[in-house]
Image 1 (cartoon, rainbow, N blue to C red):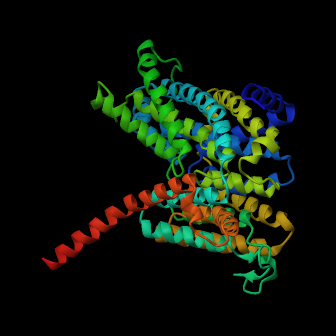
Image 2: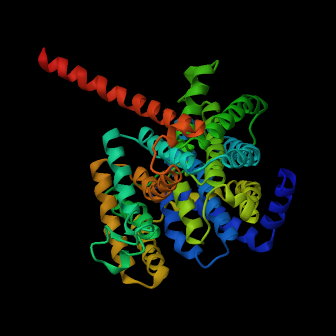
Length: 500
C-alpha cells in the first residue's frame, strides 16, 4: 500500500463517527490532565489501559494518542495564565508566557501557542507519514541479531538520557528486565521468579505495574505537597499584531524541526524538545535580553517543539515496535493487551491501525484548537478544585481498572505493591521510565537473542558479522562511553583532591 492510498484509507477510518468520538474524548482528556498539575499523560494512559481492553484496537489507540498530544496543548494554558505548568514540557513556557500575560497579552500568548502547536502537529504528523514507511522498509532487512542490537540500543539510550545518576538508571533498567522475565520460560517451560505464586506463572501484568508506578505513586507524592491558590490573569484579545506574527513564524518552524527530530530519538520527547527550542531561540535572537521578560519567541518555539515531538514519538513505536519514551512503552503495552505484536508487521498486517492512528492526529490537532481557545475559562476554573477531591477518583479508577483485567484481587495487591515501590523510587531519586522500558523490551530482547544464537548455532559472532547489528552495537558502545566519561572524570578529580 503506497502512502497516498494509506492516508486515504486512514482518513476513512478516522472520520467514522465512532473514531471521531474517541479522538475527541482523548483530546479532551489530554487537555484536562495537561491543565491539572500532578496527573500527566503517563499516569492517565496507565489508568485507562484496562478500559480499552473491551474497545476496538483502532479506536482505543486513537484515544490514547489523543491524550498524549492533547496534554501538550493543555499544559500551555496554565503556564501562561497562572505561571503553573500542567506538564513538564510546559515548564519553559512559564518564563515568557506568564510575563506576556502580566503585560496584558495573555490572549496573544495563548493564540500563538495554539497555532504553533497546530502547525507543529500537522508537520509532525506529515513526518510520520514520510518516515514510518521508510523505517518499515528498512526494518524488513532486520533479523534476530539486528532486533537484539536495536533493543539493546534502546535500553542504553534510556540510561543515557535519564535524569540523575547513571548508576541508578542502569539499576532501574536491569530491575525492569528482571520483572519482565518473570513467569514461564517459553523455551524450557520452567517457572522463573514466580516464588511459587500461581498468578505469576504467565508473567507480571503490565497494567498494574504501570498504574502503580505512575498513578498510585504520583498520588502519594502529590499529597505530600501543599497547594496554594493562584490568581488568574485576565484574557484580552486573542489576535496577535503583525509584528508578533512575524516574530513567531521562524520560532514555530524551527521548533517544529527540533521537536520532529528529538521526538524520534529514544529518550527524547516533548520536554527535551521544548527546552532545546528555547535555548536555540535565545541564542539566535536579535533581542536575547527580552527572553524571560515576555518574548513571544519563548512561547512560539517551545510550544511548537513539544507538540511536534509528541507526534513523531510514534515513528519508532509504529514502525519498529521500539518505544522512544515511557509513554510510548505504555502504548506498546496497550497494543499487546489487544493481542497486537508491535513492529514492522503492523503496517502490513494491520494497516487500519497504522494509518488510522496517523490520520486521527490531523483530526485531533484541529479539535484541540477548538477545545483550548474558546474553553480556556473552563479549564482555568478547574484548578480551583482541591486535590483532596481529585485523588479519590483517580484512586478508584486505578483499582477498578486493575481488578477488571481478570477479576482478580491479586492485581489489586500488585497495584498497591508497585504504587509503594514507585513512591520509594521517587524518594530515592530513581526515575521509573527506564524501569518501564526495561520491562517492555527485556522479554523481547531475550527472545531475539535466543533466535539469533539458534540461527548461528551458538556462535556470538553473528552480532558483529552482520553490518546493521554491528553498527547498532558500535553506537551503543559509543553512547555508554560518552555517558561514563563525566562520572570517570569526576571520580578522578575527587581522588586527586583527597590525595592532595
